[in-house]
Image (tube, rainbow, N blue to C red; front, top):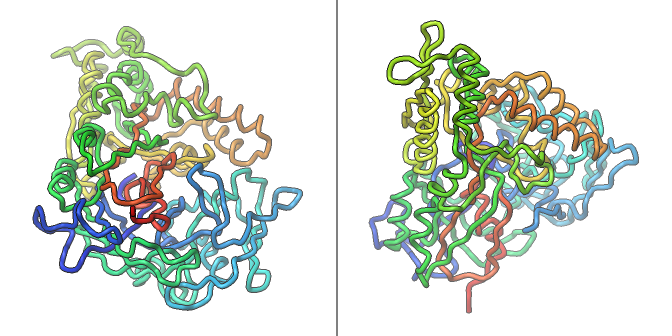
Length: 527
């Protein structure tokens, strides 16, 4: 949800003497060497250890998984030499490791490293909030030095997609506490890049791994400059301090006619939503939640906030996803919102704000400081809510301030995972994960939704799973725990000095591991 939850981060160094906090004009900019790149991103990871969740969805440049995703999100072999052999009952997955792979410290990769990685993550003592995504795993064991066998508790249709998870070296991480060990900030992996330095709050610097099994990258140095404020990132890019940046749509549009830079527009599963905590007396009321869902003008948000670079969100899955429940699309309906509130006993009070039993229909909505897109969503949401008689008090704050308040106060949040619907919906909605870090932030509790999630996760029948996720999405319309607003495109601007750049359909987490630099190791300088 923020920084690297889930997902996702990567990159690395600058030309000699240049730092991520350099003064305007002192960076490499669009005139820099093609073997070095400086990217401006909005946030940094809290840890670089996959044992605690880093890079779990693939594309980590420090590590590799058994499998990886290509540009079309198709699974391909990575540390495994081929896709897994699947048992006839769907309960065993056998992977054979690629020969000759070494960690960046020169030690060979073996099946013991894979077993250690998965067993540590699955250990209840490890504080990995994504552990529920591996719930199907009953056992993981080595079969010699080059084979790993996963045994599942139940057939889990998308299991292979979970094995993009990065593998760590047992000989290093196994000697440390996964929560406090130096591996969190000094990682060693098999990936194309090696961490050179990390100045918290400023930059992460990486250098190419010359012994990378896939061939040494042509881009030798990469720096991810951590710049939280959107406007500052755009200014730094324009001044030449940065070679590229993650930008909101309105700022990316200002580079449209810049011949030295290229803009990349990536479709995503990333949605903006308002969490409606059940512990709050106002947002915990179903009538309030349904009225807010009816009052919001999603299309206006796409048009005015995203400059058209997105789509209305009628639930957690985008409208063009094959699992999307057709027919749940809905327009703004202020009259309908008012009827819902009237029937529930919320009557108009002072200033047009509704009241029931002395309680005003009023609540706080927090958004992270510096995020202009979330700020604009929050203000538009408050404006729409007021038309129905609900007061939304918008506040900006740092995540350090927001996190302790998430139980009681609404948050303008971002989520979304590409691939199978289980990958994002379970952690967002299942009641067993209520309040588990950034999982189920709204503490949503709906028995029908839980049943659909469990059915979708545990069935191997496509028709059964489709029916489960269809019913789930329709139940969310009747009993919304979140107000889904928009699915946003990710916008990137980058100096036009390399070949081989593409974008994937991206999850919420982006900046480090997504973007046109998701395949950084494949870039080639333009001749």
